[in-house]
Image (cartoon, rainbow, N blue to C red; front, side, top):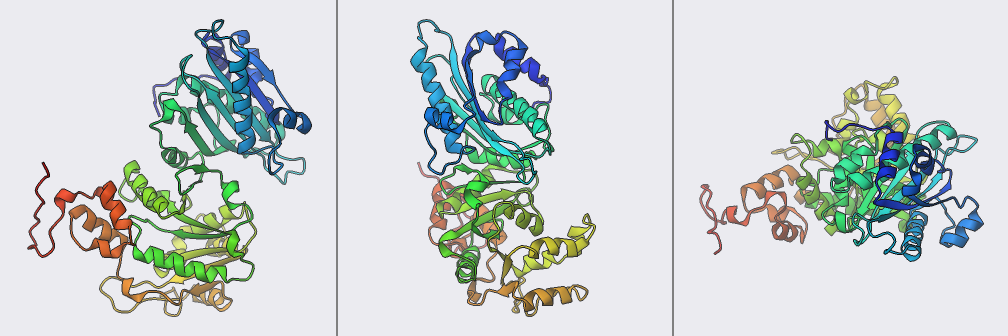
Length: 489
């Protein structure tokens, strides 16, 4: 973030927008989000900015204007997109360009549900802006999904108003700096008040923006703890992916994906789909990368992140980026969206970390509290064997070196079937480690191709991922001294 940027109040931002004679558009707010346009009316000079402000609070009126949603939901992305398109099209249809030659049109919209009276539903919503940056250009679109954390509907409405002002202001003045636009959304707000767990920027002014990097920025900057994107690289809202699903997750560095990773997910999936209370067609598989893993070599390398994402997406996988170092926090996150049976696939080496008490010193109940959170849910852990380098013996649940003080807890969980071994694993690949593959790729050493799944080696070579350089490749059969291939002319 630009530390020299002066953060304006919501009133100052609204006034600056109003005084810009080239910004002109409409506001449409449904549900509980009736707070944004108020800032612009009260700031002064609103006639230069607001062509129309409306609220279709009644559902029948809303349907008559924007059409019915297929699933009957009103606080959803499709409703927001319909609102933005409908209102923007009306701007172009009803306003003669000859009368507004310098105007850049916009449509702002939101659909919001605040906390309910019983305080059992916390509140969330969608807001977005469709806008031009020059009078003749095609429109851009920025949309965000919000989760409210305040425990009072009025406070949530006020927070929504500030966020809406920040969003419109950012689109007007920071559209050339997408990261700055993103960071400015929290001006005069904190994560304790509101969480942004999904953002998407599209349009001619954002053609160089990779929305996956924006997702990464949300987690990196503490705006949310987890983001999801689809195999085709689209940012997804968690509820749309996880709601009432049987979730099966595997955590790793995937730097690169190895045959071990694929064997883990394939064998674990076969066991999971046979479980009681698991519907095979309802399973959502997630490949999770933690923020701490992305920072393993220091600060986050965005290209390294994209390399991992490209591989997983090419394999048709849905990717989760999270700041949940401890597994119990990950399961707690999943539990927001589903009560169905869930599964975690992990190596025995990861299980040993789960049973390391140092990770739970901040909990009053220590490791027992974390396990209470884990296994009070309908959760099953599938253990893949692990072998230390240069050792013949491998570890399973039967011989895992659990500390004697925690062995009774471990035995209880295995006896009750909450943790089970993956039986039909491929022992011949237990000596494959992602870090070794990465070092070989970067050094140009041959043989790493046999350690990764079919086609992954081709993807790495064709796209030069993870530092692969064909001019550094060591020819098979050469001496230990590195030889480089001659450059092609």
